[in-house]
Length: 320
Image (cartoon, rainbow, N blue to C red; front, side, top):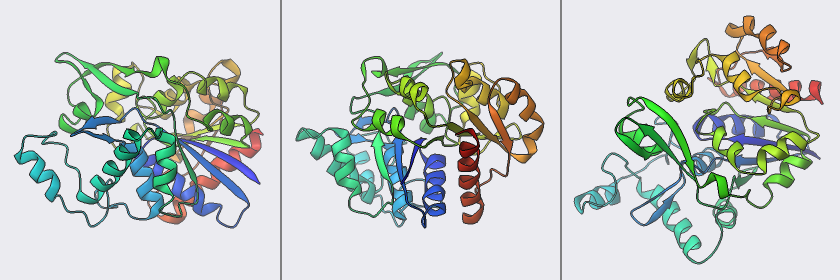
């Protein structure tokens, strides 16, 4: 059985993982996905896990493809009622079906079940075809440093649409967090480790900030291959450019690959996929010790997405 590990954020990572699962449907393979939990927060007494839920809903086929997040066919009566009481954030609306997930998860957490255990129990409702692992059972939350003070990442991202210039990012709790059960073992025993085209700063960055995960990536015998979230100098989705600017990295496929760095030089990458339009950047990446290939990255159609997943595996096989 081929063992594949994916490091993933939310929507982009969810779509890439779905494509990978579908591309391997006829093969003997196990896919385990280490998901960012630093977007998580407490709100209205509930533990909200946006990236975990985005990946779950997408793999279950119950996500809202039009909005790009949440459950399809949602109503928002409960959120509206909570807002009447002044509870929660009026700019952060949770659907009623989504609230069901948050209530169930919080109930398990209150009963002493760790997040990884809650994820296992909640995702068993659907045949996802992959195993989801939170990066840690500990509470880690990303806060954004701005001229108006520090705020939770969700406030900066959702309320302000990343328009407030960020001066930096703080992953609170990451320094003392430990990998969730199974995370290090999955990476160390993998045949390939893939970094999804997720935000490198606030999605993949927090995963790498958990003590033990970066070390596992350094030690694994598996090739580590990433997919650029930048195409032709623009973000694929979201506002990753604002995050990159805040840490002094250009919104550029090669710049992001070089920020991750070559594993042979203390970074995390053996290989890096860029889009065809960025083919001219391949020599720079190769000279830095990162095997690179230019392929179509847009996941506009299911077959295009599956082709991208196969390209990532092919580059990993070349480096294996």
